[in-house]
Length: 297
Ligand code: PMP
Image (cartoon, rainbow, N blue to C red; front, side, top):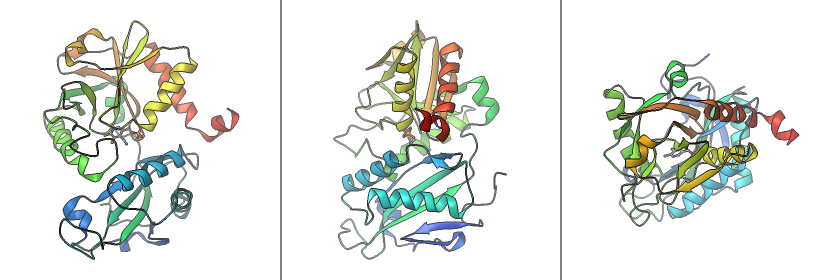
């Protein structure tokens, strides 16, 4: 059953700096550097039938993202993997969302943060469909975002750094208030980039097209879907996609750990009809994330 209690007030355990502690005690001080200066990186993972899909890729991305933010997580990638597994086990979860986060603590306040302690925590909870199921099946309605994905010369654009989500939350709220599920963001040059928490694919004449991830996250789900499409003999073109082209595609879908593979029905004035390729990839992804299937590969 999905817990509707606020996230700070739940039963269970959080892995916090090397130990599993009571969920409600997993707190930090208000003068934590991360809260003021966004010196944090996080991950979003999903476990299926007790196993976290592509766990090591997520842990590695967390570790590498921290390095980009100029801090070193005091645990190895293998130890981060183990922390994630311990967290789901301690909470008796098998199908769930997993959220590791690494951040700078409260030893120093100001832009400089050399003396701060680096913390790592992992929480896990039951989290069903990222988009409400009825919207998901009908296909999502997306609006165009105003903010753009930043130039990699402006921000660490390819990490899951907390600060990058400031504009995502603003845009997601703007979309929701206008009755849309999410917003499609362009990049700093005006090319189609991604949604506020998922990558995007388009289909035209049986070929998949997806933006080149040169200034946004090259998602693990995105890479999985490219691999699955390849196995079906589907051609995938990674290229610059201009907003003027949005009307030329017949199908569209978004992908991400939380979003999985979700069809899109509408982007601003353009409409799409989820078809056979979309359905095949949803089914292939659903099978690929299951541990049985992976063992058989
Ligand atoms: N872009 C953004 C901005 C995201 O937050 C996510 C979710 N992590 C993705 C893309 C998809 O990445 P992944 O498939 O690795 O979850």
